[in-house]
Length: 304
Image (cartoon, rainbow, N blue to C red; front, side, top):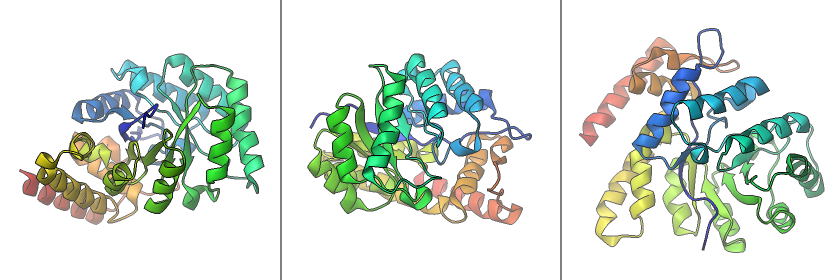
């Protein structure tokens, strides 16, 4: 198998200022730190990054901030989709011209496309309007939020029509059998797990890596699993890393995941600005935050 993209990519959270605008400097520092901690790259402006709570200009400014902060453009996978094709084209062109590795694209999620033909027309129109041979697209399958699944037949048609452009899929539906089925049907198509504990089984089933939220916190463990999962001599380390990944992922889900991740980052980065979050989410209560921080300390102590 030869993938156009593979590795551990962080679904990076996005820090906000008190007024709800993106904290560009803090975001640039965060993306740089994630690379230093072990991520191959940063999948910014996805679900964990609150992408759909930002306007087009803020999303483009965040991409520029990541680059200005020291993350190479070819380490970035920005989310550039929008229900408005014109906005998706604008953000995708901006990303390609900035030199990104690939973009991650949700299907349209307001007006529901009732057929693969409708979804094909959506993706094809963006690709054709961007009209740049450098464009690489990773599809984003998260039907529990979009209400729009990405079928295997749609993948087949997109690969056939745009073989050098549509290179992979982030599967956040949590069904490992679907990820394995995609890998089996399309061996050179990069399947990226959307849940941290599924990195190892995805790799074992012929997949390419992950784009996950808990890599904001345990990038090193995910990188160890990715680098050494085939090495019998490192099996004990891989198991320990996998156990750590599961424990930290479970903690991110103790309360609503996104504000919990940002609460954990506030402690990890030593900056309470990470507690700011867009509506409709609400910050954790003080009692909830105290529980999370106490559990973090216990996990960190166990790893020491």
